[in-house]
Image (cartoon, rainbow, N blue to C red; front, top):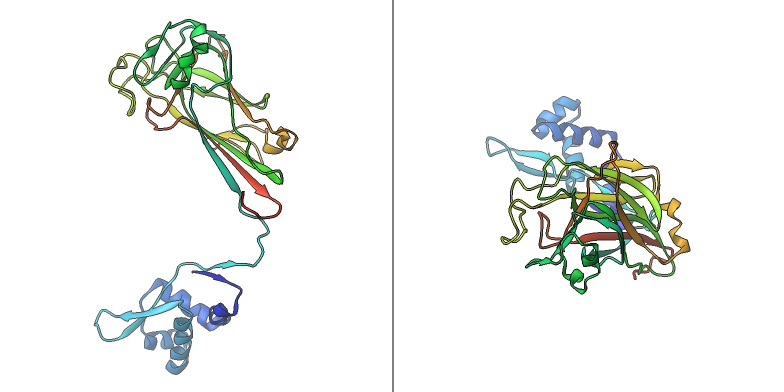
Length: 308
């Protein structure tokens, strides 16, 4: 039940303002009892029980239903919680902007090394294993891209109003490691930067081809990477996490986003402990297991409560 502080809900407050009625609610929440049984249990007259039950019913906290013999009315609880909405919110709701960024819509790519390449949902963009393919005009149609070493960077639109403050950033990205053909147990370490500040790293456990990706087109060779894992990156008030596991103590205030209108996300392949590079594969909406590109969500507050 959702209520507020208006006089309309005064019966609810009055109904709860009684130790007797609170005890009655507790009893009938756990077992079916008649008014007569309730009177004996609480050592109160049946008339008093009846009066208090009707106060609870008028507040819509309980209702009456037929008992097992289909004759006596049995009281039962009609709600499981009450939420009180006060006139002013101490912690205002966040607004949000969401963006679906195509994986080929990067604005910077550096030090890419093979194996590497791009493909649309209908063909491979040639030449493969040549860094120059990443500068092709066809890259904007890419639905899968991969490289063994290097970094890639995306711009996230920053369209919050002038009086807004970014409170939380989230990214959902389907990704895997990179291995020629495929290797289901090939690990890779990926680092992340937000506005050129390192926010943490994660390890990708494999490059998967055990089954065809749900959205991977049929023409794509079955022995090539088919899908990745959807990683949920969150930069919040306390830390940066991936899938709710903290990867660094960098929080949203450390990024000082109020000093810039620029938002960029960079991903780079980092060396593993044995100095090998496990690569990175990114999946778009027409490849892999998830029908999305890079999903970015910006949560923000406003100091005047006006929605942009």
